[in-house]
Length: 289
Image (cartoon, rainbow, N blue to C red; front, side, top):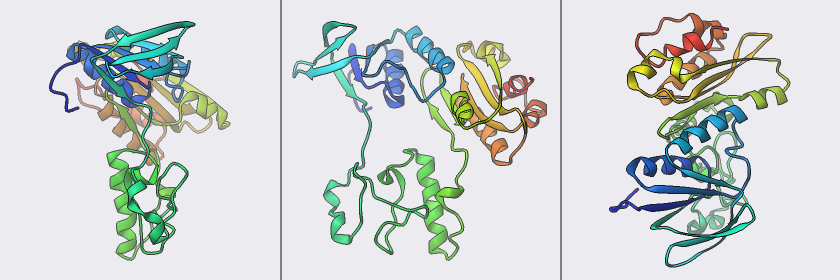
């Protein structure tokens, strides 16, 4: 993020959300971007149709995605050596981004001296109230090894602050429907269960889908790539999860989260009145099933 010169060739090792965000960013800047991922399945957390749509938008930006690439080494001259589809490659890069995951930077804190235990990955071990193994010490944010979002760190503060104020009536167990967004050129946002997870959990589901191109505001913005998908409990009509691959999805998802938090049925969003032209009004059409 602090580079002062644009790399002509950027190699990103790791095909997770952070790697994809930077891939999209630098492709827009004009870099030739190659993403090397060791597994064959692209963003396995998502349903196949969503993953395929995301892959299509990234490749449409000119990003080369190499799934199943086995990294063998990185040389001082910027050459990344790897095996892919039975052949050997040595890509020369002006910059290399390692996006293979993060772990808490706790090694230098000498936590054992305070009897604060850590997990095998170095995260501070906490309970549902964010209390560490040492009474009187709490831990919040990324250091606990949980969801690594700014807004969940803020919510961590609420959990601890309530205890310090004598309440303690809010915990990690009470946290629900945490959304997340991936800020690519076509942003992706999601909250709740996807279709695969809902079926595995035993739900009988109804699926709603629509292309982003059907949204009037998407046409106004000339941002028509992507799709919208919702997973609904067929027995109760409650919203189990929503996935939005479209412009301004990072704003739209907050409306869906609010509806889910209030245990609303999908008809609530189907019949709600939203201003026009906005991306959020697409929820009327998405839930018209």
